[in-house]
Structure formats: C-alpha cells, structure tokens
Length: 139
Image (cartoon, rainbow, N blue to C red; front, side, top):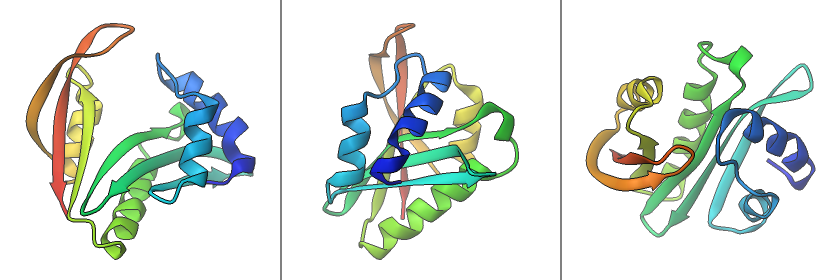
C-alpha cells in the first residue's frame, strides 16, 4: 500500500465496515515503520488490503478486507499469508487480532489460518455494540 492507494482503500473500507478507518489511520499505515500494509489489485482496482502493526516480537492484525465480489477466491488468505511471511522475516513470533463474536465467516477463516481464541473483550465494537474475541497465531 502506498499513499497513492489511500483514497481507493478508504472507499473500499467504507463499503465493508460499519466503523471504517480514518484517512489518518491509513496514512500512518503507509508512513510509519512499525506498520506493514499491502493491497491486492485486479483490473487496476484495489480489491483487498491488509494492515499489521509490529512491536518487537508480536504484531496486531489491525484490518483486513476483501471486496464482496472478490470473496471466496482465496484473496484474504493470500493477503494474510504474505503479511505473515513479512512478519516472520522481521522475527515476529505472535500475531494477534480481534474479531466480532458474531462474525462466523471471519472466525472460520482465522481458525483455518491457525489462530486460536484466547480471550474476550466486552463491548469492544460499536455499531452495533458487540464483544470481540481475541485470537492469536504462533508464527
């Protein structure tokens, strides 16, 4: 992901999430050294993106998204696998994430990628208010 991608990524983010990221969030993701971000492009359009933040030996999967018309094609898996490769190159040992407890599709995806649930954050999400499952993957 580059600064030139931000407007298109923002548009996709707003289509997918009830509480989208701000432009400042994405600007940080492309400019600060502890972030790693990438986009997936098909037919000259961004159809997916991922952002991770690494601090020392652990990282957080801050956001991952795939356009609805591109889902079920393995794009989310490819983005996450590439991100994990980068994290491993940077000697990261664990990758954490939060996911809505009602998001069964995402939960199955993350479990299939080797994440396990370790805790719950009460009322973590809004629009609607909902708990988050905290998950981790050993790298």
